[in-house]
Length: 569
Image 1 (spheres, rainbow, N blue to C red):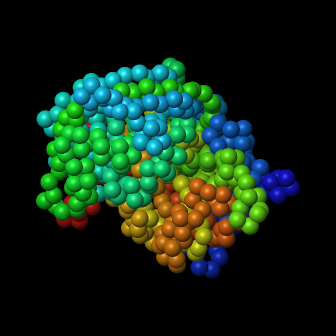
Image 2: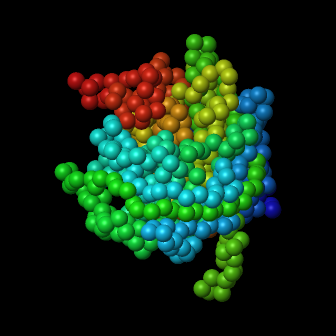
Image 3: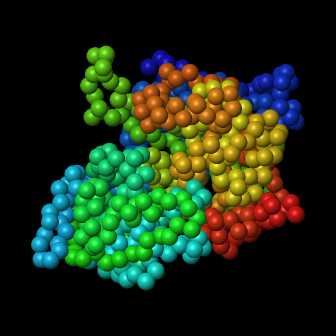
């Protein structure tokens, strides 16, 4: 308890304005030019992480009392900075979440008047429904390949197929050769596409590469637990694919039997989707004989959790309605009590998933940048909204709710800087800027990197599709340009990041026992401070580049900037 209280006390106290790190040797141009930049404190960041990642907060699971403690702590920090409550005079944007758990599932393939019952968890696994507690239905089936409908990329797996009132059978993944971030967006959007086409259910078949990375038996472990969605203010649960009554995954063996019954070879079809040849021919869809009969029961529970929101007003009345958003998710995945027992050495297993780097470090960075900006006697031109988000680990839910139910009537978000999981395990000298290629926020990152002496490195893990996996992406889907930074590759950064993903990511090892590098935390905060400052003070709001996929898809009528290559000409 003493450790927790000391950390809280240290994190809550502010340094005297413009006194720390004064004219120290080796300062970057940004620190020499801006006394506020010299205020960024590694000690403050460390103290915040120590509090949020302490065992007493039990992993900050969404909807838990421990998350509520963390949320109250963040609100107290906002108050100490002199910020304004961001939600109608309150710090909290309360959100109701529905937890849906599968209670009963049966599935049969009916062909030639005979029903073949499949075995739950061996042949298939069905997730819970958020809109119907009982599903009992039969429908014909249509194979639609990867289920991609993307005219802008010249791909339409639904061409010539009628799927209205039918169940689509879909291969997981997205076409090879499409850029990773775009491919991930297409893959995530296929349920909505199927629903928009009139399909009433989806049967998913795992691709060969997907099976290698996540075998069916492990997938079962993910699907059989509960999932969560937010409840809209009118009491309904908003889902992307309202026409789809159910979604299920088949084992490789069950999938092969189903497709083979139509006279097609599943293995050959899957091989075609693995091809990276530019002239590779995509298989066409076809009708699968018979019907699928499904019965599924879901159990529901509702909990409340909150985004923690504060505002710093801007100084330019002409820009008062243009909010720059700083976001970081506060939640993690809690205490996995069901994993209790002894390890191989006979010691009790650690079941608390503390989330020190994911994402106590991100929240600590956000709070430190907020503190320095708030204490700066020169206010930013644009207002800045600071938000510690809930429900990221449940599927970006807190940010999705905020992006759809924006908390300010006096303006809109124009750019997002997101702080999520800086891997502070080495001497950081560079960062990866996810989303930098999409909008003018990339130019802001380049300017901030030059001012701070921190390099910018291309994405070194493109297969992870990190751009679509954190909270900024919820705002991107609402048309807002966004930037998400990850610690880079220099000085062993690539090895540190990949090792963290393999050993401690979403595990009990992401705790305070790690060799955390607080000077790297300070540099990471310095760079983000510079980005936020430049964005808030720029003459022009952030803009998508001409021809950018995300801008054209999510904000087709918004303002545009010339793409970098065109600007150079």
